[in-house]
Amino acid sequence: MRLRGAVKELDSAWYDATNNLMLTADARKALFEELLWEHRELAEAHDKCQVIPEASIDALKEQLAAAQREKDQLIQQHQEELSAHKTSYQELKSQLIQLGLDHAKVLKAAEADAAAKMDEALEDARNATVVLRAELEELAKARKGAEEKAARLEEEHKECNQLILQTDALAYRLFPDSQTYAVKKVNARRTVQGQANLAVPWTPNDHLDPLAWRGGAGYFLPNRDRLKGAGRRIREWQCSAARAGADSALRVACSWYPELDLDALTGVREGAETDLDPILTAKRQDRAYRIAEYAEMRTFIPPPPDVKDYLDEAEDEAEEEPLDDAGTGDVPPEAPAA
Image (cartoon, rainbow, N blue to C red; front, side, top):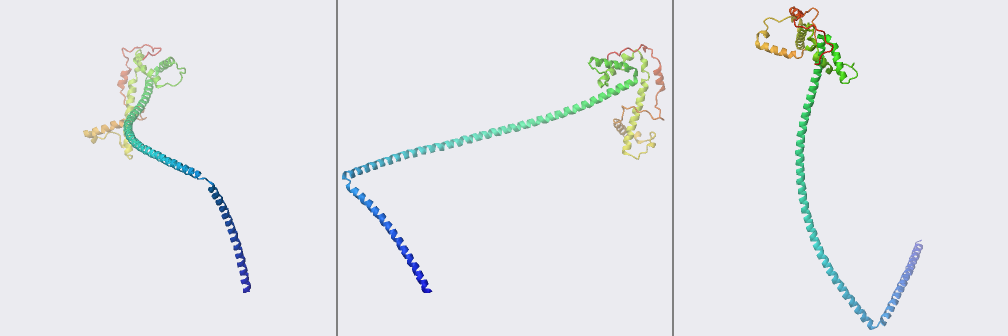
C-alpha cells in the first residue's frame, strides 16, 4: 500500500513537472518571438538610419537648435508675462485691500450714523410715547369727568322730570279744574309741533306747559276762591313731612338697637342730657339733620286713624272769608300763554 501510494505521488509529481515544463517552454517561445520581432524592427530602423545623408543630420540639428531658441524665447516671454501678471496681481491686491479698508471705514461710519439716528429716533419715540400717554391720561380723565358729568346731568334730568311730574300732579290735586285747560294747552302745542297722535301719555315736557300757568295769576286772578284750602293742604304736607322724619329717625334707632322698646317712646323725657347740655344738643341736632336727608318727603303719609293732625281752625276760617279784591269772573275758555 505504501509503495502504491508512493508510485501514485511520483506519478502526480511527474505530471506536474511535465506540465510546468510545457508552460515554461511556451512562455520562452512567446518571449523569443517578441524579441525576434523587436530585433527585426530595430534592424530595419538601423538600416534606414544608415541610408540618411549627412546633410539631413545637419538640417535636423539646425531645426533642433531653432526649436530650442524658440523654446527659450517662449520661456522668456512667458516669464515676462508672468512677471507682468504678478505685478498686476500685486497692484490689484493692494487696490482690493485699500477698497476693503475704505469699505470697512465707510461701513463703520454708516453703522455709527445709523446707530445715532436709531438712538435719536428711539428717544423721540419714547418722548412721544410719554407725551401721548400723558395726553391719553388727560383724555381719559376728561372723558371720565365728562361721563360722570353726563351721568350726573342724566340723573339730575331724571330727578327734574320726576319733580316736574310730582309738582304737576300736586298742582292738579290742588287745582283739579285746571285739567281741562291743561289738556287743551298740551294738545295745541302738540298740534303745532306736528304730532298726529294726541292720545299718547304726557312727557315731562308736556307737563311743563300746563305747570307754568296751572294755578298762576293769569288763570286764578279772575276767581281767587279757588285758592281756598291751599294753606290747609300745605299744613297737611308739613305734618306728613314730620311723620316721615320721625319714621326715618326710628328706623335708624331700631336698626342699631333691635330690642328698643317703642312703647316707651311716647314723649320727650324731662331732664334729658341731650336737652340740657349744649354740646350734646348740637350733636343731636346735627345727627337728626343728617338722618332727615333719608326721609321720604315726596310721598304723602296720612295720619293713623286714631291721630288727628293739629290744624289751626282760625286760619281755615280766615281763608274762608271773602276777599274784597277777589274777582268773580268766569274761567277763561283757554289758559293764557305762560
